[in-house]
Image: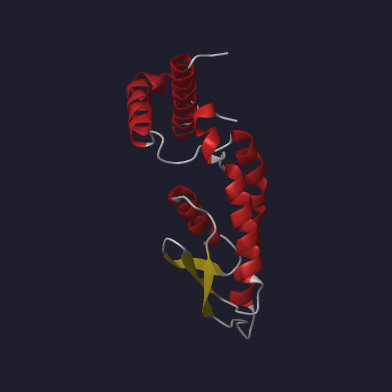
Length: 174
């Protein structure tokens, strides 16, 4: 069994490696995969990693990478469906809209999950997040006849699965 301080230390090393890898990958993507950009990039990547570790220190639940990989195709398909839906409505001769505001009661109990949900709602077909509070999100929809509440409920459930349970937050990257 690993002692508490060794466990805590190994958790921080894993968190450091994970963040450094993510920021390095992003840097290389933004720089077109040019490895010579790492001459400038390494100090920037290191600073971003350190800053993220300082700011994110045990304040938010940890995202589970495997669940994130499962979430991305769902999110991509929903975004594509949103673009097609809005395009069809705008191009239709009668402009098929019945706009309105809908209140959705939140069950996610942490800010990062609520903010992610609000941002993802904006990419659902015909919706945009209008206001976010601690326990409710107000959504503007192009058509009140759409099953917006059910769609948001499904999205919220999927986003909840992205995060490790609070008791497992010290346990690493799941």
